[in-house]
Image (cartoon, rainbow, N blue to C red; front, top):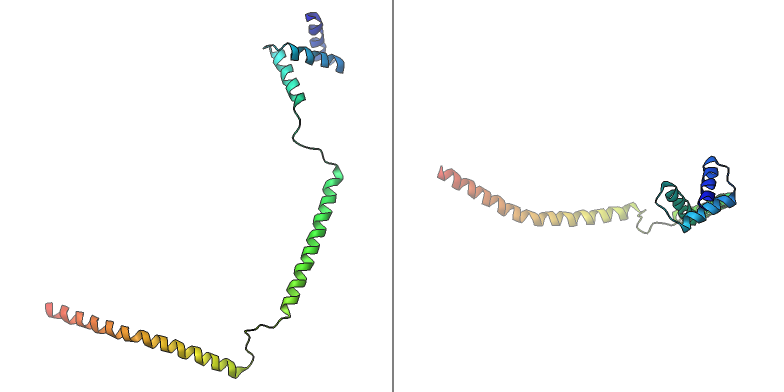
Amino acid sequence: MESRIEQLLTKYWDGETSLQEEEELKAYFKANPSLTPTGMYFRGVNKTAEEVSARQFRKPGDWFARSRWTVAATIVIGVLVGTMILRDTGKKNDFEITDPEQAYAIAQTVLSKMSTSLNKGQAPATQLKKISQAEELIKEQQL
């Protein structure tokens, strides 16, 4: 048997073996694992043959069919968004003021409220002004 394996190995390395002879070599090294470089090579060949590829083959037309559906979906979404935007532009703004006298009255009310708030802040500011003047007088007397 060893001489048969040696002959098959010689033919294998020369590239002259048939598929049956290669299967015989693989089966021999699978049944008799050895630590020689040849045995390790065939162990790797057997291991690689047993592994299932993680990548799946897809038909060439699959990509094209998927891309057509993607383009169609994009167009539909674009049309829907466009119609929603156009429908919203026709609505009137509820807070829009078209009457100039009404706008003037609102502006006058807002400005008077703002003025009242600012005047309330002036009273503490005058107190702070008096305190700072008193501090300056004390500093002048100390010098």
